[in-house]
Length: 397
Image (cartoon, rainbow, N blue to C red; front, top):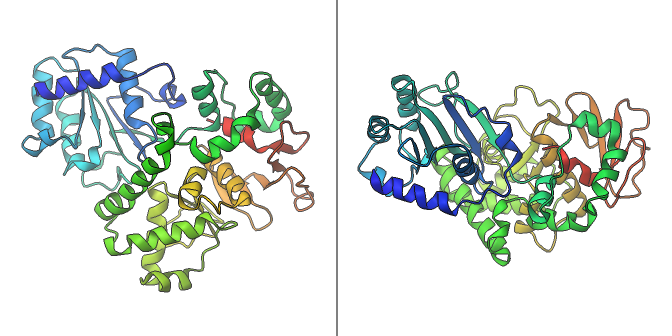
């Protein structure tokens, strides 16, 4: 156990706290069992270590461990917890729980057997809390984390403190909000860079190797997490990569399930399941006419990549401008809001608001008779009336 504590101390010493994600202030850290889900590379581990460094004693009362550590080849999580508590442990942080067999049952037992212990765990976006063998849904408070918003990217790279806004504020006061932002930074100056390489926090490490790292993340999800956690056949992984490249070049992608399932070599139902798993893994965003009660057997009306950086990773020379705009919009709104397909426009938000996304010259001709409708325009610093700059939707989290 001492070796785990030494590794924890080294990680804490290397952790920077100058910038923290907005999710830090949303999490109820006083809960006894907290789960943090999200795709690889979005910053779950960093967030957890930052919280420890800023709020907890770095002594025998606190421990961070990654459950993919070789130490667990001969030791169990239950044994570790028992030793930790007996030595005065109060705060236990567990990283990558999905890599540990029977994680859910052991976490349930820990929660029940050590009521004085607070536990925080992270795992893949594919992590099943409700359907795991030991149902943790009544015990754990679960949060989902995604990549940097455009607002967070600006704050991180420029050392700013731009506040987030909610959708109601944005729709009612977007001109005033845009003026306030433009007084501190020219948002269009940095927008294209964010779309290409600003979503995953690791862009800071070695910028020229960003897409190499992103490719590694994608491969680990497709080749390891999907087969392990969703039983996707490894033989079909290369076909799924082809599908993702097609999506990256589309305007946007409207799936022909029969043709695509035949091309990949699986039956229709299996193909639709795979599309659903890609969304669960935060590689795609699937759009449906009715987002309530979606099942893995429901065919999506449109498919987008989860974020614009993935479009440049899969198709750096053929990323479609219209698709980039819509992908950014659905990514930034989809984190806190319900986004549905609309046959009359591009998007229907929270069963209330209609949005049409386009370039600077986009008009409201298509939606002028639709209530609660708005035009979202690219290459625009300020909007007026129901015409809102696209970049401003990057301030919603």
